[in-house]
Image (cartoon, rainbow, N blue to C red; front, side, top):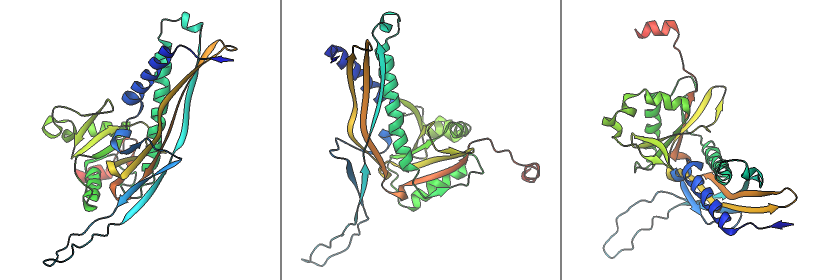
Length: 285
């Protein structure tokens, strides 16, 4: 028979989980359009078309824009992360086991949140590059050009998520690392370091799609991806006498969906250093 443990312990543990999830669990949730408190198995994000302004005659009727509304459904899914904490093990270690398990559960759910968001990004069809080159300045400018051509707002809410290899390539660009271009201070995204360049906030992420050294990165506007949350990270702690241990369970209900394909560009990069052949090198010289 299960007996509930002290409520103070539960509240402290829940506070640790929420803090870890918010600060270190997910990198991408704050970079997209997010809706919390969803009731039901799914929710709808509205994609609103463009309006056109027109003139009118004196005393005439104001023309109606007849905006096109395209509902985009986002289905929520339930996820869990739990572990056992043996009562006697807690007496034999100087490690705060509660905090360790809280962080591990929060990180696992945070990675799942980012996985859902990246899966939604991965349905985008507009792209630049062909996986034969590394992340170059020309490739980046081509992606920015596509966003500008699609009238995607340059309102400070453009983001880019890149892999480790691509981040190192960015660090080799003077424009990306020089304070003359990006400023002295780097913005933080969910507690993680990022950089602002070309009006884009650049974020490093290890979970981007990669196949045979072909890496997909993404440059996007925050409103192009939707994230829905029916239940934030919730913690349940129960005592199991037959195991002489507490079982600590974390759960959440979330989903993500692509809202506007025009607002996100897939950047196809090589995930390894590309070495030019000798003839091409000689020609460039």
